[in-house]
Image (cartoon, rainbow, N blue to C red; front, side, top):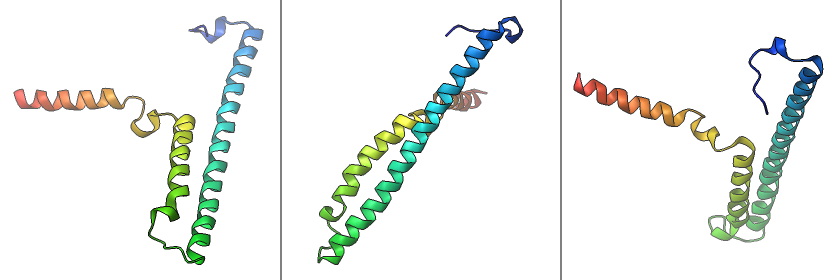
Length: 112
């Protein structure tokens, strides 16, 4: 996509195209968020039901078999989370630069 420095220098049709393109990107992100939240809701509801069935039919609560579905499905849910929110969600976009600056400032204070 080309960079636009001055919004006054673009034509009306190009501006309309860029706004529509931005709208479609935003719509795609919202659909991904909705998909993730439905996945999360079904994960919680189904796993509570499965754990309840296992325990009520004589299974032990504290065993791997009771939580195996939740565990493996949770791995898939985590990757879905990363796909929707991105790996920057955990550390932020500028996390690495902030940490480098923090450690450099710490080292500078030692030498002053």
